[in-house]
Length: 289
Image 1 (spheres, rainbow, N blue to C red):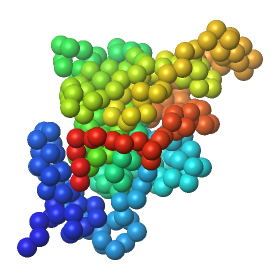
Image 2: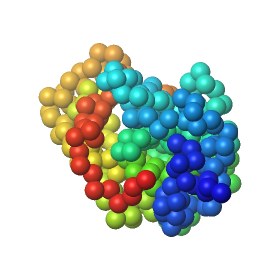
Image 3: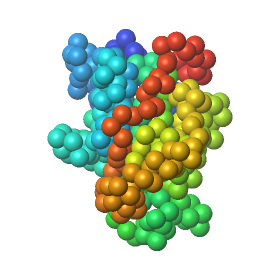
């Protein structure tokens, strides 16, 4: 009888090597059963079981990565609670988590999983509420339902990243500069996996045409992260300041108003996608499928 983790059984199934690697990385065994459930509930001949996606943007907000991927004729998809898909795109629900995991399983080898993990309860400005610190292992005030929900989203997205790692899929996460995401147990563990050569960069979105300077951090395994850096010049700072004066934008108030617990990229064109060049890169990734 063939193993449910045999890739010959279903296009989205994990190979035996990938399943073993997932367990070695600390993922719970029930995650393997969840992948098996997805395979059993999806016909191997249907279009939704093809491993053909180039990018998958989770917590997409305005969907900048998704839109730019489509412009470049890349097969892409998005996952966003505020979209017209409703609760099916709610990572906090079991059906939403399964739907997102299935979307990640459809990413082909050396594709890109991009995550704009909700930062409203991770940044400095809300520290009085979430109270994340080393005294509570960066898990925050667990008496608050909002903090517990935030931690649930963090842990579930981390599990999806682990699945992508074992399937030789690149991943990248975007956060504001003051976010404590990389200090939480889930993501500090990911960054400690030196065998995967994780990368961490800081940059200014204002250098890419954003309406504010907006210091930002990016981290993950995507090789393109090494190429993302633009120093914010004085001329660019002056342009941003003049634009804010003309439009009457108050940066702090606008950021708080538009966040709503969902990461939103306000730029119409996401600049990072210009650096997607995996078709010409020779990867020596540790994992294969």
